[in-house]
Image (cartoon, rainbow, N blue to C red):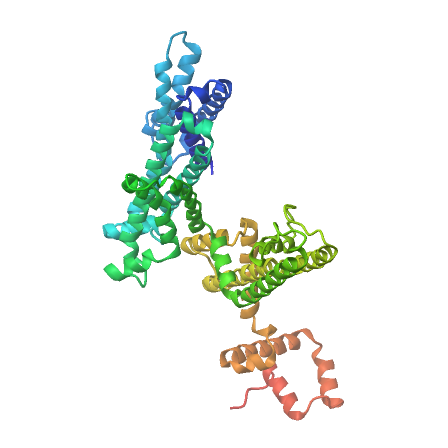
Length: 499
């Protein structure tokens, strides 16, 4: 977690350093830029000192004669030191060291502290596999991706967010005037990254089950929803580049906001919602049909009552549909409203009806979404039950459970409670004594185990009870038949068991 926050701070430093070279942005907020630089240096310095202090505990340096000196001379430590040295030199040496500020770019090298171990892990997990299989492990979720796959996903997510923010800011004329070139460069880099990702996915998709064929497999991948979204995210750029001399395609720039849909690949909520809509589609279609009927009826009545009084606003039924929708949806912009008594009475009735009718799809989706989450969590519990067959969860099983829990928005505490519950239920199921007798009799193994338990309990009963009083009550008062008394004596070992 510390590495993750340090990485985000490094990226923020890089963005601040780039922004500093834009006078229109840097000059009014120079104090804030300086304060952020001081904060960053303080964090990086504290990180360096903590790593230096803890070097004797690190497996890489604890065997050295002087572990702290060994750490100071290590490549990562030198990068950490160079990342903060320009600030201290400029603060304590009365020289013009503005050129040293460019050394702050080296802070981005601190990211190698996260990248290098992830690359080593990825190479070790994919040792002996083909290049295409390695590419597949990088861009698609699999058991071979490891940390590097998550870094790749986070890299794409960051660029999606950055490019969308750039598109939004580009619509502000004052900002677009100052940063026109920067926006063009940023968009070109983003499109390059997204195009490379799209090509890598098409190239390696044949490693997925059901897509092994070279052409049909890739065509099948290209038809998936996520691939169509990836294609639409880069299409406006290439259309504008290659067809600008034939058509004015600047309007396509707004479609770059479709890049936001790329984020649906990285959230499990979208998958759950898709399943919910697919499962509840007949009910949703029925409610949509009812809403459509209500809208047409409302528009027709509105035209009937208001056409003569307001021919400009209720000119025809299609034009009245706009008023019907905003009335039934309880929005009521106020630009169109009835003025006749019958029109107003009808509006009141239809507005009240709209509150209930238009709320049906939302209620259906909410209920179905909750139900789908419950089903998927029950599925997760069943998987836990199977994984606990050997009594333990290995590293691969734990990683799978945590990934599924993240998709289902379960906290670590909830996962731990689920594991405890699954373990307890499995123990109870393995305890034959808690099962009904007819279920015990249905399985010979369970019946034998239960029989052994009963014999053991009878022997314990013989040890714990008063033998003389038991014999007196059983024989004198004839509470046991001769066969039952003989069986008791045999189980207690007082008489030999007859063959």
